[in-house]
Length: 90
Length: 232
Image 1 (cartoon, chains in turn yellow, blue):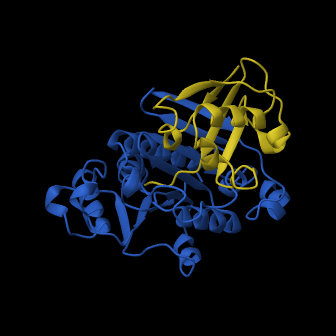
Image 2 (cartoon, each protein chain N blue to C red; image 1 turned 180 degrees about the vertical axis):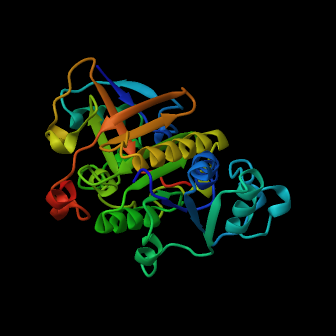
């Protein structure tokens, strides 16, 4: 299981949890597992075509998945995955 | 930029701008630098919990006037310039001209992307900040490193993300991020940015700060074709 850090705007889907565990060998599989356990969360991260939304970034061990293999980026047990959306309050 | 008088522009005298100005003021006053503040908004009672330069008696007044006076009360020697203006595509380049570092204290995705793109084009260092509820982000956009649009390719469509009015902002989070923005601006002025190429993410509930590494994105619409020039 990997640890997924949940950003503030998405914690309403995870009952307020800032970190959850998720199963999967890739980021894509992780997101599917998140959706299974926390319905509705994936639509905030990915668009209708399944791609990560342009105002959201996902990091695996602090590396941007767009520089790795995007949703195919491998994830191992114990890895930390961060979902970071743009926020604009000031 | 050490030695010569410097000019810092703070766009937005709100939740981020106020703590940033408060943290910048003593150093800028000491050095004889100038701080310019741009905002067209008026103080509202809902602002007071986090927009620390404004008082109850300032409700209804323009934020730039309230901020200028607040800074002047504590640091009478500080040179403060104000512009009662909202940054937009029609004035951003003129607004940025003549400054050494820009602080983004705006409160919309549109303005944050606009400022990023304009600062990249002008090769001006930008300190970006954003807050919502109990979390905050900041990064330094400086030549040679990823810009804001390298990280977030485009703003969310209307309705996809809650505004700060809808989501709310914990006052202390704005204070932390604003103060860190000031710290980063001063570091940039000293030629030693500490948050270039990284996004710092702060969570007030856990008290945790962490950094994620950013890379310039070759296809970035703002700096992608300028990466080589940006780095020179």
